[in-house]
Length: 307
Image 1 (spheres, one colour):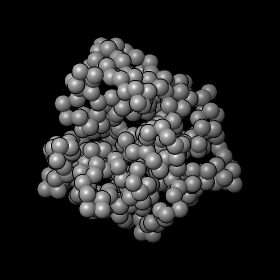
Image 2: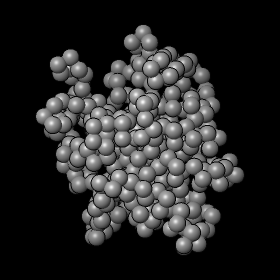
Image 3: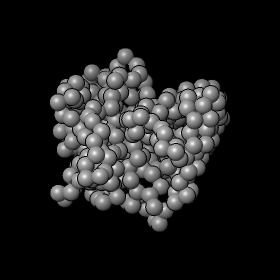
Image 4: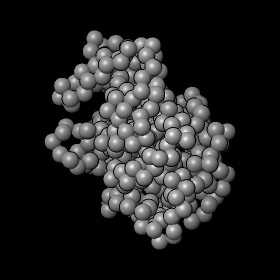
């Protein structure tokens, strides 16, 4: 299903970053010094430069959850959000492809959900899994964690959303408590925004009929509110704080020149030149575990978009 001008939090952060840098008129040396703070990605993942601007650029975006709380390192955490940004530089078009976290993949001959790839092998395994699934070559990656999510939402002054269903969920192990009432218009701070972003079901088992697929659409709605907020005049006095916190929570293997090349074009993208899709497939239970099964035959349109 086509969606207009929606994305995930990391994409919003990177776009916002370019806007702020332009607005503040950074000098060249200071600009590169700041941008290179983000270039602290995994040494095992080298960027694949695109020399021919006629070739698409594929950027894998990952949002990691809080893991089991036993370590501060992102290596032990699941990718709660996975999106492929397929950017056609010469055509000025971008396609954003969401991959449900419950997607079935094979790791070392065993069935796994794709969100486990980061736990088992870090960024390289996530990239490898998406490359095999979608038959693409990943050029760059970017990653943000939920601590960054909360800090970013707080820094922009929160976001406003309409609650379209009752949300009542508690997970003591993760200290996660989600309580919203249908019909409310709520101003979400960072903590509440994370709760809204992560909700899938209630304590009584009711919730999204399609699980993670519906949850992705809920995330898109929140990000639409984020874009609305960051493009309003109210964001101007908050810019210094946002510039301060972004490098702490975002990592990428793009260097300053890469960000400057692709960033400005991406933020000027119009809805007409952007498509957002979620890969198609079926929900199935395999050996007692529920998975999203990618169906290659149902994704010919997506394959045509990104190749």
